Amino acid sequence: MALLRNGGLSLPPQPVWTGDTTNWTADPFSDRNWRFQHHTLRWLNPLRWAALEGDNEARAEWIRIVRSWGEANVPASASKSDFAWKDMADGNRAIQLALGIPFVSGDDDWFVELLEYHRDWLMDESHIVGKNHGLHQHQGLIVLGAGLRDVSAIETAVARMREQFKSSFDHQGTNDEGSVAYHQLNLAWWRRGWERAELEGFTAPEDVRERLAAAGRVLAHVAMPNGALPQIGDSPRVRARRGYSAASDFVASNGEEGDAPAEHAAVFDGGFITSRSGWGQERPLPDESHAVIRHGVELGAHSHRDRGSIHIYSAGQPWLVDSGFHSYQRDAPEPEYLKSREAHNVAFLVGARHISNAPVELASHSISEDAHDFSLKDHGYGTADVRRRIIYLPGPDCWIVIDSADPAVGQQIRQHWHVEPDLQVRMLDNGYRLVGQTSELLMYWLGRGSTLRRDVAAESSLDGWIGTKWKTMRPSTRLVAESSLQRPRLVTLIAPRRSVPLGIVSSYVTSIGDVSVTVVRGQDEWRIRTFGDGLTVRQQ
Image (cartoon, rainbow, N blue to C red; front, side, top):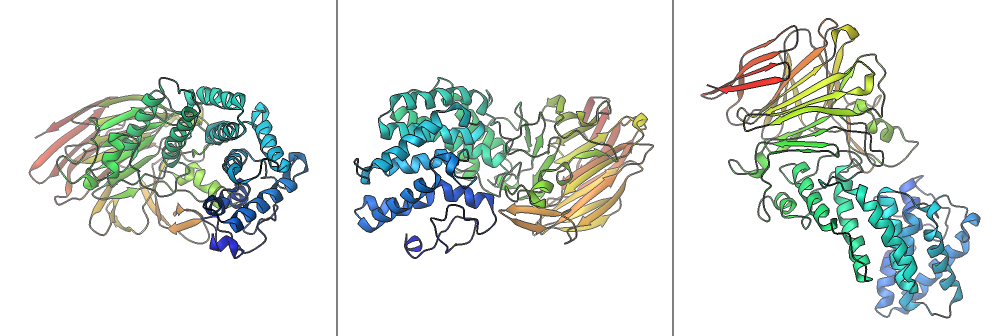
């Protein structure tokens, strides 16, 4: 509050601004998110809290700023700001206004009119959107309706929530925004929304608790073994939080609370596949191996064009990652690049146009103690489907990724692999060794005809850069593999080194794409063979 009283405004992650806080067209950082936050009026909370404690100066300042906002932006048609009535900003601001009712006199007609204008705005169906922005509008209408004693407004908001919830979390608990961070945020937002509805005497649909609990289990599966969430979609680097399910509590607490899920692999129709070596039974939980695979249809919202990608974590850290998140700036090159397929661990047909909203189909899968086997078809190249098969083998603790296309297409296959920042990348014979502080990951390309290169981050290009948090890009490396024209196929074996490294005794890739490889760790040997869609794993 001292900052506000001294003329400063803090809207993280932006720096402090010392301009006129009632300049409702201000844009000091040329940033959409700053303008959005400015018009939510959430930054008035410190003044409101102080006013509720009897601070008359804080009360007067809160009223001054709110009245200034109303005079400048009501009616909406007179507002000079394109964010004053932006969806979600309207709902958030409605909550802030309603929470200020206790210390504004009922005789202040301007304030009552401001509340009623917001209520009427949010009652108008044409102003309501979907996804989490719509949810914030519904919550704003609930709180505003409670403040105005308008039961019909609350009824309208709850009816909208009931309808929207059907698609927000599916029957397996997967959120519809295509972002791991927003999956967790929606869990918190929807729980709060239903709590507000129940406080006003309205009951949630019967399946709400069940679906939210399932969403907590999804969170546990997609979370990395160290408790961090992978950067999938618009996701900064954050950790899983406690309080959503026994399973997510287990991951968030490093196994000290809650209960581990029974499954080591899971397929979620909403676009995620997860696979891991275990839940800390045979090695410390953070040392387990883990992968997240994207599939399914275009989701829009906060998703990226990452369907078909794979994220790999093992031996205490992430290795092969998404290129991350930068900001919501529509005119900035970084967000546009980070959403593109080029910024994800996917396979391409070289030189062919890809239809960005095409589905990536999970064509088949098989999960057993010996192997987690997933086959994808990328329908983005018309009739020339690119097929990706991802096999995790818990015994030798390694992955085999097979990317292929029909030779008749006459184009090469290319893979992109984005390396976690701060890792060293060392060239091997037909592969790479990624070196972290305490462990290593080995990558080998099996068969003939593959060519490899490294794209190291440079100022002249966004290739190889990772967006780790708001408007923060860190340099890293992108590994690129290309097949020959004659054999449009790439077979990649990926394995953590661990205390006993993985060795390849023999490998062979046939002309039709069947793979035969024998690997060892210490005294243990495994023979792995793919034939068509089939797979055999034999431990010697």
